[in-house]
Length: 381
Ligand code: ADP
Ligand code: MG
Image (cartoon, rainbow, N blue to C red; front, side, top):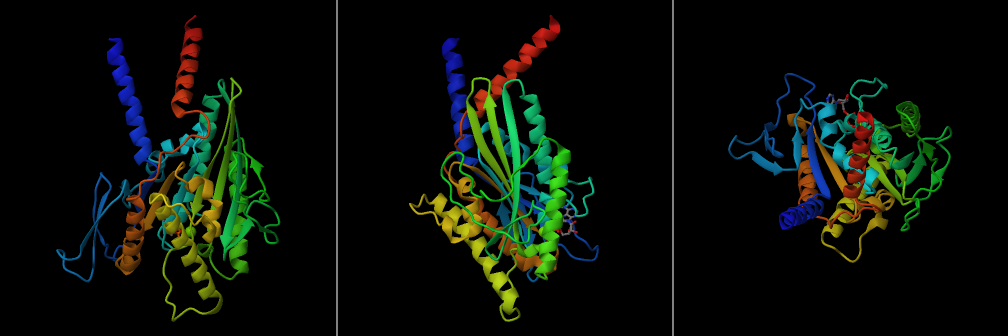
């Protein structure tokens, strides 16, 4: 019997290893609902298994079919809660010491901000991943409070034309921040961005309100919409357990600038400069992920502010999730194909095993179980 259990245990370890190996970069596709009932959709089929078929409106049913495969596809009817549920285990792993990075990619108007923040105006209905993630981390922290003490801090910045600005300060317009490429455990890549301790969802809501206001202010100042900048919310988690060992990890939640290609013949001046900066940083992101997959000796993090900032969460030891957002309408077909192709390229990449910054999640989960059993015992007595 002992031998049997050992085999089972070894198989489980192997299974976990395989999961870790293939699970480090995931791609989910999300299709937003159509705004107009008359508009024709290009979506032909959404499978439970992550398959997606779209139809080229200019071709026949047979010739115009394009098939894609992702880890998951959320159709237009998917709710914020459903999307969150499938993201939750990844988010939770930050509490076990993994660095995690979640991106929203797609053309302007495809639903990136809806997924990450929720509808604008601060209504509590349909809150996005940013809020739901922090709420979940607080719950988990509370559940584990007998075995580990967590401190959670957040920073939020915007990258516009390769300049970084703090979104969580009253005077966000003045200072341009420097990114430090960090290697050590406690090295912060944005030492000068304000760091806010958060203990409750109220703290989070207040900060997000400030971030939203600052983003709007800056986009009016540059006479443009926020879709031209990347916003990055970083959640820093510090934990110290009863034995004194510590973890430090971070979760980056990124709402990327719109990926649409602008017609070079039509834009000039500032708009052209913006478009070039966006193209550059998004293609750098693709290059970094490709270089990681090919295990290149040189990973071009330094080619953009975005990749430099996310460096610690994009390495082979972190977990990455990309949401590829598409609009269902025929008008968007060209951009939809280009988004899906980019996403497909990312999803076929396998990074190395994710590495925990300190203690393995298995150990953490076992400790959690022990504590809850102890509690159950004392209740019985
Ligand atoms: P992006 O950030 O990619 O430019 P938004 O998130 O601002 O796009 O979405 C564009 C519009 O579509 C917004 O009015 C948003 O509320 C709406 N929208 C996007 N996705 C959804 C969804 N899944 N369900 C309902 N409305 C959505
Ligand atoms: Mg947006």
